[in-house]
Image 1 (cartoon, each protein chain N blue to C red):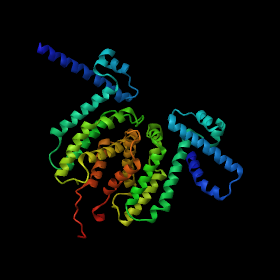
Image 2: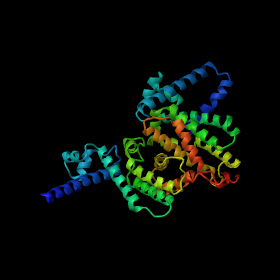
Image 3: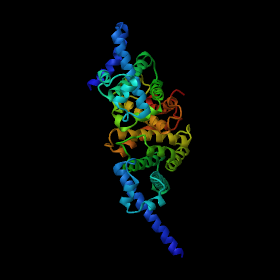
Image 4: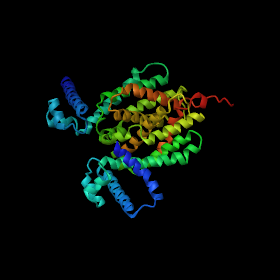
Length: 202
Length: 215
């Protein structure tokens, strides 16, 4: 009996992933706004009823993508970051974020103010929490100044990162976003260096 | 290109015309142009740039479609004028105030003005501007950016920020973050004081350009 249950859960998980992956592929190709649920079920070979069983709406696909992103960043934090300076660890996190943006099929050719991005700002908290943890670690080690709370600093960096992604969109997604974001954030982090620089006048 | 020039000239001429004692006809023309401008901006804000037709604009401004084309050759021209008016504000701020003073706080003040501009344009319009169709307006080379370059150069010369990075790059760097602030504000449906947020954010960004020699 337990075995059957287990198998059923596995199957359900597989169907959900199948729908999810087909949806993301379509969203990647057409943009979130123009991909329809009809297309998603056609591509994943399930009925409309099955779709709604797993995802109550198209936005819940996005919700799933954020959940998966949160998990990915949690894993990254747990075991995927280089040992060494906090700065290098923060930049490795940022690199991964850029890879995610690059591969997520962001609608850089449509509106930037859209439900998907809005959603991200409101709900993309799990992945931000991972960065806040890294920032807090950097402050403890004295690599970053403590004049902003880690969560506040994290919000600050995300605003700037979205600015870079926006710039990348303005350039039609042509530059290498990973290199572009890395360079930008590497520089910006200088603004948060240890506050107590020995004064030459003292 | 020619239309852009025309729009900017329109702004510059606004000064000279005042001095030249405008004729009645000229005054009337200026008034019509302004009515079309105001009606367009109102409609862009309410309905979106894409969804607004020239017929809608003419109707709202109480002029004929032909009359619209007398003053503007396209819908984008009106938006260009919006930016030209904004640029005129920056020019005034720079020439009359900022270049006379010292310190890197001037960059913060300049960008606060940018925040103020977005705030006064309102969330609905800003949201429209942050979309693909209008993204051409957000690209570099506009007076709003070149004037900041001037200010950055001044700060580099006096040593309040480091001079190793080319001023254009510093300016681009600042605007990238500033647009992040604006986008964030839009995504929060215009909640919060964008002018203050812009100032606080940019003050930090500027710190990233304080080299060891300027500490």
